[in-house]
Image 1: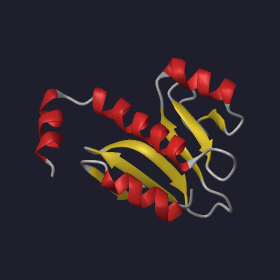
Image 2: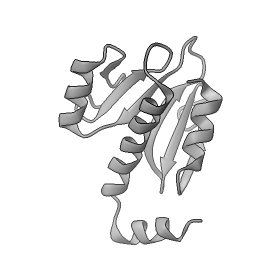
Image 3: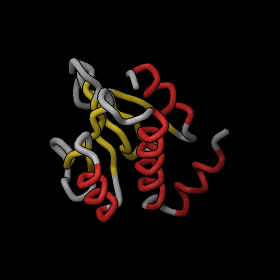
Image 4: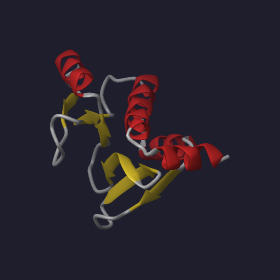
Length: 119
């Protein structure tokens, strides 16, 4: 997966915005203002930080050498995924969807209603 494919996919997810809150080198994707994906723009290879259910995070790390505890993140809730090796784009999209849904689960009822109003 490349950065353009990643960006296009994330922006298809309902209520998603992108910004650079940590400076020009870190692209952040949010749903309803809450971060679900971060990626470095100055890295030679694409890797992404994704939120993950704690139990699944451990399972994924044990199964795939490309998935490690979240770099500069809460290691219990975030994974760093190397997107340039053997993981398929469809699997990476599945991980992105999981991260997105983990954030949505924590939204307030009002925020969920606002998200549903997006088209």
